Length: 138
Length: 138
DNA sequence: GTAGTGTCTCTAGTAACTAGAGGTTCAAGA
DNA sequence: TCTTGAACCTCTAGTTACTAGAGACACTAC
Image (cartoon, rainbow over all chains, first blue to last red; front, side, top):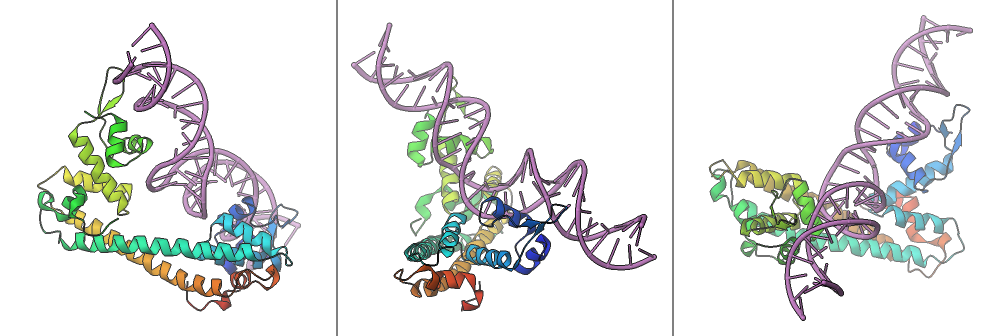
């Protein structure tokens, strides 16, 4: 049996976050000591590792809920799981695309100002004031 | 003079968001009609466009505050502005890097499951449960 | 004058935590 | 067995950048 601090160390999920996951229903309520402290078993550790891994991959709490629900029904179709993963992938790709556009624009803007001049002549400030200076849609 | 709705249409910033920017100190308090409605001048419109553009580029409200402060002092060095832009650029690059790693992992995970099987054999669920299956650090 | 749309303030909700207060329990050493 | 200090408990509130809704008032066009 692990205390919440033990669990935290093993999974690298912070203690308040573990409690938060419990509150959100991702983790089921663990046993308690007589003094009301949480005690987790191996299943609890596994579950939290799953959550941590999914969060690291950017899945939302809601998506993880659904995945955990599925996990609890081994005989059910896993189409939903596949869909969640695919949708997460396309989210990530959309974000990358957007960030790449921003990156280009920021490179252009940064290059225009070395920080040596005064605010009045600053290309960073001028660029932000005038969208026309932008070369890449965003 | 523009009403808040006019301003909203011209800048494509929603009305409550404009009020929010005012509350955060990004926009100075505009004049009011006798009936207490906001009325903006050209300077207000320009300022909001600046904010919108900066937000679109991912700058935080705090960063925009500093940029606006600088804008108000044309004779001051623009080093801070340059630094803010450079730091924003490195933030964006760091995000892209991380997202690319996630993308690779998600592609691998998604490919492993076509959604035709059952939850028990699902590669998506298995991958999340076992970090060892991951090929790319994240 | 009146109808209908726009605007006002205020509160609360969103996602996924994080921080802090004030109090209790546990485990290890003396 | 006692004590001490770290770990734990619950609860509230704060973070970011908004968004939604309620209930009331203002403006504009006919």
